[in-house]
Amino acid sequence: KITAAIHYEVTLSSDIQIDFDGRYRWASKTYSDPANTPGYTNQPTSQLFLSSGVKGNWGALTLFVDNVFDRDDTVAKYPPNPPLYTYSNYLRPRNFGLEFKRGF
Image 1: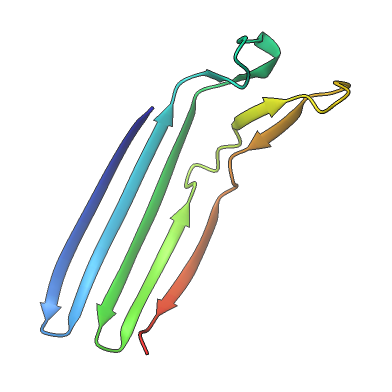
Image 2: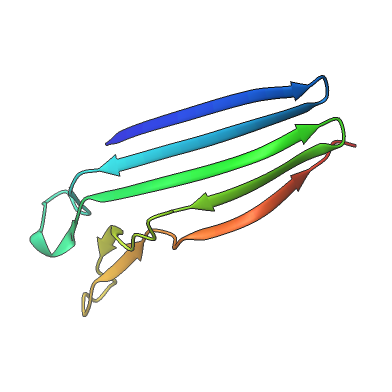
């Protein structure tokens, strides 16, 4: 696994600050079981998370995007009991939003 992160801040005035965050994660092929069964192989995955926001004495407003590439790779596979099929867990799909924070 490899993870790289970046954080950048710019102060515009005594009470306004802009920031940018990015995080990239890559993982090689993995197996979901100790025996390394080919049917439980998870292919390599890559994810990018980005956010940018503005902060002031009024609070913070941030725009974010998770899983920018909208990858649908599996992160775990396992059989239920009895093993009639394989259950797969996938990466969370792309999502984005606006977040507001304020202290009280």
